[in-house]
Image 1 (tube, helix red, strand yellow):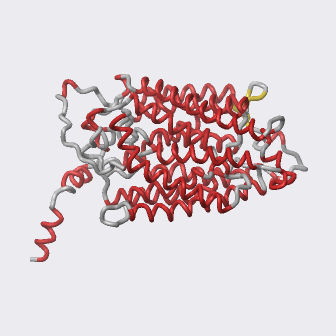
Image 2: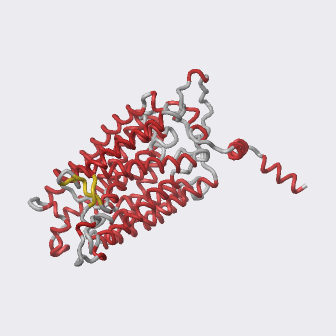
Image 3: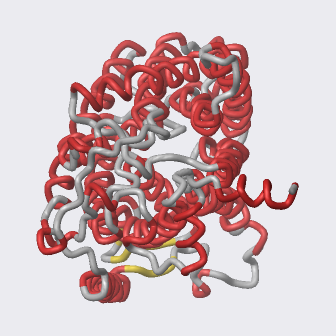
Length: 471
C-alpha cells in the first residue's frame, strides 16, 4: 500500500521561503464565519418535522409510534462508524495519529450540520422551511461519509483549513448530484454504491490529482506505521465492519427488504474477510499476514453488495460478491495504486479507488444484473415496491438508466473534485510543505514527552536499555 516507503530525498526549504501554516488567525476566522452563516440559515429555514413538533401531538398520539424509535438505532450505528470507525482507521500513520482522529472529528462535525441544510433544500423543503428529524441526520451522515472517504485520498497532506473548505464545497456537489440522479434518472441504489462510494472515490481522486506532490511519489520518511498505530487502525476497521449492515440497510424499505439488506451485508463482509486473509498470506514473500490488507481489504464485501443489497439476489450471490470485491480490492492495492501514482499523477493515499471505486463498479454491475433478472415470480407482489423506479420502464430500460447514473455520478464527482482541489491549492489554505507532511507537530500542540518519544523511537535506545538491565 505504500505505507512504509521511505524517501530521504526531500530537501527542506529555507525558513523564509516556506508558506505560513499557522492556524492562529485563518482557522478561527473560517470557523466563526461558517458558524455565523449556519446560525442565520438555521434561524431562517430550519424547523421540526411532525414527529419532533409538540404542536402536532395530541392525547391520541402514541409516542411509541414516533419515527425516532425506528430511525435512531440506525443513526446511532452510523454515528459510531463516522466518528469512531473512520477516526481510528485514519490514525494508522506513526506520527500522524492525533491528526488522523482530530481532523476526522472536525471535518465530520462540520459536514453533518452543513449537509442538513444543503440536503434539506433539495429533499425536505416545504412551505419555506426545512423540516428536520432523525432521518435528516441520517442522510447528513451519509453525506459526511462521502467527505471522509474523499479525505482519505489526501490524508497527511492537507491542513484543517483545506479540509473544511473541501467539506464546504463537496457537500453541495454531492447534494445536487444525489437530487438529480434520484429525481430524474431514478435508480435503485439502496446501499449507496453509486451515490456514496463512487461519488466519494472519484471526487477524492480529482482533489488529489490537483494537489499532486512529485517529491512524495516515492514515499516520505514519516509515511510509516507503528505497532500502536496499526492496532488503533484495526480497531477502526472492526467498528466499521460491525456496523456496516446498519449503513447498508438504514434507508431501505422496512420489512423484508431491510432484513435482506442486513443478511447480504453480513455475508459479504464475512466472505471478503476470509478471502483477504488467504490472499495476504499467499502473496506475502514470507507467507505472513499484512496488517494493511487486514485493515482495508476485509471491508470490501460491504461495498460490493451495496447496489443489490435489498434485492432477491440469494445468499450465495452475496458471498460471491464479497469474494470478487475483496480480490479486486487486494490487487488494486498491490498494483493499481502504485501505477496511478507513477503514471497518472494520482497519489491515492489510502487506496480509496480500490475499496470504494473498483468494488463500487463491481457492485453497480451486480445491481444491473439483478434488475435484469427480476421477475414477479421471484419477488411476488412486492416486485414494484422494491423496483418502484421501474414503473413505466422495462428491465432493460432501467438497466440503461443505471448505467447512465454511474457515468453521470463519476463525471460530476470528478469535475467537482478538480474544482475543489484547485481552491484547496490556493496559498491562503495553510497547506503543509512536503517535508512537514504526515507530522502531528505541524498543526497540533504535541507535548514534550511525545516529541521526545517520537524522536528516539527509531533508535536502538530500547535495545541498549535491555542490555543494561541484563548485565
